[in-house]
Structures are given as C-alpha cells and as structure tokens.
Image: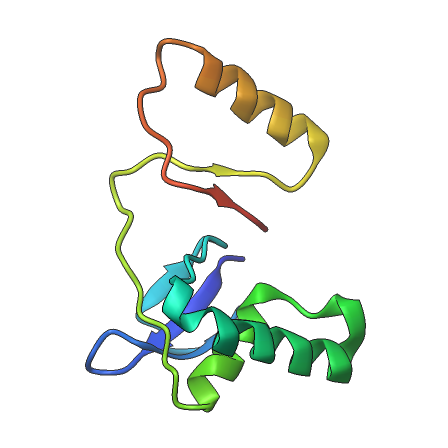
Length: 112
C-alpha cells in the first residue's frame, strides 16, 4: 500500500499512514529539506530515534514535524518519472533505465 497523506487547506501535511480512511495525496518516499529547515528536521529525527531506535521511518519524521507546527508542504509529481527502489535488483533496473537513451527525466528515488 502507498503511504496516504492527509493535508490541511494550505496543502501541508497533517498526518500520514497506510491505513487512513480519508486522504488527499500519496507519499512516494522523496523528501527535500531546505537548509533553513535542517535543524528542525534533525531534531525530529533525533527525537524519534531516541524513542524508537533505528527503526523509525521518514514518514514518522514528517508527521512529527507536522505535530510540532512545522507542517511540511507537498508537491505534485504526477507526470514525472521516478523509481521505487526497495532492493538491489530494483536499483540495478533503475540504473539500467537511467543509462538508456529512453529515459530523459527522473524526479526521485522512492521507498516502499
């Protein structure tokens, strides 16, 4: 299942979960953290790792930021190419495609 995202009126993340009944967007596992937001992001990561250990996920970091008032915004990547890479065989497939002349654009690498 894709990660489901509930947004506020300003298109900012409220919550994420694979089990949401109502959602506004999907998360493909790609996150851009501007330099000005890096300290807050790192603090959220450190807090979650202290609570959950190394098993915490990026989705939890984004929800934590949202709960703390730093609601991450989203962008629509519909129509852009990306590859989901969960294992070495998928990475090899993506690298072959990127090396071919058929592929012109990649937006990001997702996670499952």
